[in-house]
Length: 626
Image (tube, rainbow, N blue to C red; front, top):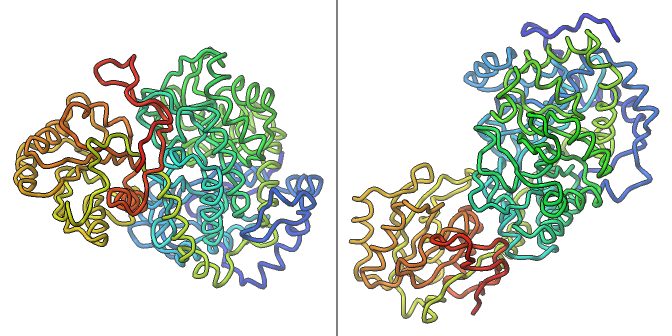
């Protein structure tokens, strides 16, 4: 155990940022530690001759102080668009939550091994700003007494979860890709997404989602999953893992041991999975086994109870039988295990914020993601090591895995973004075209009475687009009714948008329903966007009253494809599923409605009858064409 004076405090001085030449000299030793890493945008998995030198990495770990070792395990949020000069409000937020001024002081004080970007933390304003932030973070990391690059990460699943918005390329999400059913599309999407993230200095992506969504009522996974068929999900997970690796970023399969059959949001509570061991083997395990076989870099844990794998009343994130016994022992995974956010209620219900990191590490975790109270978490882990509860050698095991990953990504050799790469790569014309091309294969046509679709500008020129307008999940446009109306206008229609509600309150008020019905009269067709329609949802009233006008009604599910089960008897003429309300998927749906693209998506989940859940309304693989 090391004894040094670098005890974290909010008054720790921030080291002067060295020049690039100084940094290159300072990291020469670090670079020599790695047998070499790939340049940005190349496939680290495809370069076995550039594997890290474990003995040299162990020698580096032996020189690290205990505070440096503890910090290396944490991946932390920080407010601000700049590592050293954030806005005053972000400085205040950092001081209040973490006790530091900015990212540079966070790194100097707590020696964190990684930083996670969020849009709400003002980390992701524009591509050049993101790249500059990443470079500032690396500059601060390499200015430490033991110079170490940081692993910058984010949740860029695409679809409804994306932290980096336009002008970066945004792709259809997982369930849309599941509807498309093409492994080549999933691999191309991940390769392009990875290249863009790497150009921004983001080298770990918390994707793909490997959960098999077998529960239509799942409140937290849903369309973030590729679907309900373990074999199909496994194939697409494998494709994305390889694509991200080819793009130069570390992929992360989540949420182990499987979050697909939950009825509770683990952000808010502690879900219980009632699958038997046999059901886990058949339903939940295959995508994780496939990811490991594909060389996945990291696996993220789930904050949920899984009694068949561990009967103790602790979430999987804190379960040694699940993480060390099953994930490492049975499945043979030796990469980085990262927790889901430690700020989520599912992992905080039983233990304090000072104990959760200790228990996670003892369970087999390597990276501790985004603790709500970093000082409490950091000091709690230090006390555990100093008391002997956690051997320092246990820290060394995790740090070795983390440094190996950084080495494979080439961060010891090339920690900074490349000049000009952002402008050349992020949101390039070819990337945007690929996103549209992939999206054109995802929209699913579930109903088309009397061949109403595709609509023709000659027969159905005057359109009304109404319905729910959830906030754009990536801050890249919207609202979806306006995007849809605009896209149809560009395809030769006259289309007016009329929003009836928001994603936060999707049920329209009676006066909004009345306004929509009045606006619909005399139109050639109405397109109604729906969002998570429930049994008592006023969206059902909206659709029924629109259909009662005699105007043909086309329903477009903006999120879960299950909406049609609640609307089957409402007088609809046609129904489609877009699987997300991002611009790229809404525009693709417009092209299908207008006949500019054929509906080629097939349901990656089954839709059951609302009045008889034991009966299937639309089976897995269903989809009409024209």
